[in-house]
Amino acid sequence: MVRSRCPVFADTPPLRCEGTVIHAGRTTATAEARITGTADRKLYAHATTTCAVFALPEAA
Image 1 (tube, rainbow, N blue to C red):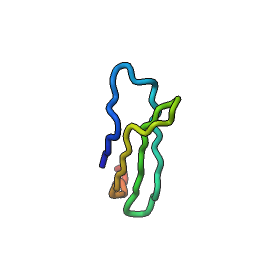
Image 2: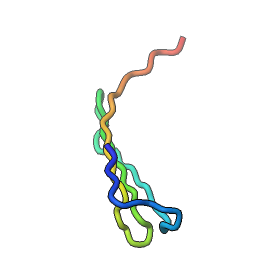
Image 3: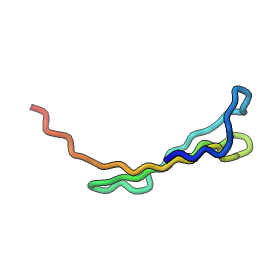
């Protein structure tokens, strides 16, 4: 889910996106990301996700 807090325009100062794994388990993983201004640390957007983890099949 992405929550946009502030609009971003061509003249918006530089932004930083940082992602963090909150939990990485055997069957599920959760993570979040934040987009902030590099100078003022203003929050522009925040996102979270929950993913299913599957084992890859063995290569032949």
